[in-house]
Length: 319
Image (cartoon, rainbow, N blue to C red; front, top):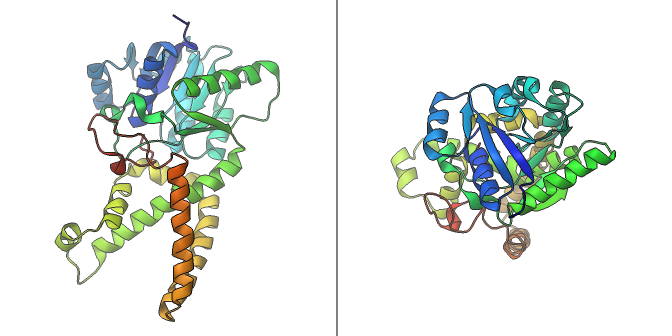
């Protein structure tokens, strides 16, 4: 049996993603001992009941002692506080990563809070469901999904070796790994993830507030498209509040472009410009077909504790 990539892994914050990292890493034999730090007494009770970790504590520094890998799986705006709490327990040469969907803000928080002897490699597994909490985790979540790592601008041999080791870790969990500049990551995700969530929250809120249509009618007559919006809008509100605040520049840039395109679409409808509508719908259908061809239609096919079908699983991150 091969030795684990990381003899000890500490996970700070154990919701859907944190629990899934543990389950996937153990299933792959990528880690040995697992310690979890979580500030929620209720979460700690569930983590213990599920047998997710070898040790569970509210003391972040204690969980991180002697850890070879520390994974921060807390909301983005809580990252600085979590890193400060972990710092006293970190050994020299530990690899530090995270699972947040904003990277520039996370890089700043981690580099300010953590010692220079730590290898900080921000990361983002593009996988998840709208479910949250330790019970939502499942080992197959990262299968065939992309994980983006945004390493610091370092080229020294020990740091590059740490990047290779973390890449091997995510590959062992079944993921495809890509390295990217953190600012480019934030712009890409503003388009592919953050804006769609903002639209979902807004359209469901509009439906709830619309006079002349009752809430019962909204629920009873929801077509497939609206049901998809409500599923996305059911994501963790704390996490998504933090995402929009931490990535506001990129989100506002993409939102401005979207607003312009939406106004053009409104004019096409108003003036019955059917050709323009048909051309747009044809182009967007090809994008959808490309996503399916690339194997990125769902976060994981028919996996998870509730055994939902693939059509009910999305790339929504809930921590």
